[in-house]
Amino acid sequence: MFTVCGSATGEWLADLPDVKDALGLDDSQYDQTLLRMVRRASSRIESYLGRSLQTQVYQAVLPGYGRRKLVLPAYPVRSLFRVFDGTDTGTGTELTATAGDFRLDAARGVLERDDGWPWTFQMREAISPFPEPGQEYPRFLVEFSAGYVPPLGKCSTFDGTTTTGMTLEQDLQDATIALVRNMWHDRSRPTNVRSKSVGEISISYGESKGELPDEVLAILAPYRSNL
Image 1 (cartoon, one colour):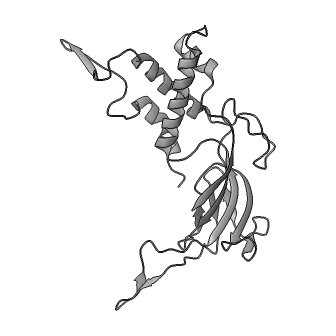
Image 2: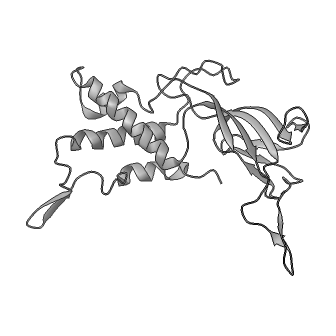
């Protein structure tokens, strides 16, 4: 279980001037149309990756599963506020990286602990008892901020850092621009037309069955998992 406690105000993963430059546009006639496309492309990319890319503050209550690595639900981590062995900040034992309780891999959002993160579960009665699937007890509470500062984002220092400038990876901006470019070239095409053929020449248009274009998928591939 995790809760979003605060977020940056940016909505877009690409800046309008960069989008217009990629499309060869130099006037403001289509600015509002392009901004809608950028917003839509940003939302689709975050949906595909399964996480918000923009800076937010989280409180997560997680099970340990007995592993050495505790995986946070968002990354990259910008600030790690508090980690508790327990789900209550008043009664749980606070763990700290400075005391050597764990190590933080900020880029992947992973807390690694030599002693492991204990697994709490219910046992199914049988001849040989075994853990009841899906009954893991969330034991660790983590408060942290994670994500990037997007173009035009207003992150300030609400998330515990002093970085206020854009931190979004260039690859993610490029993927957003590529998706907007695809939307732009497809805007006047009938939605039920996917391809055209003339003799041996065949042209396919844009997306198929709601999928992202191959160019975008290739750029996003390294960002899909934090393990």
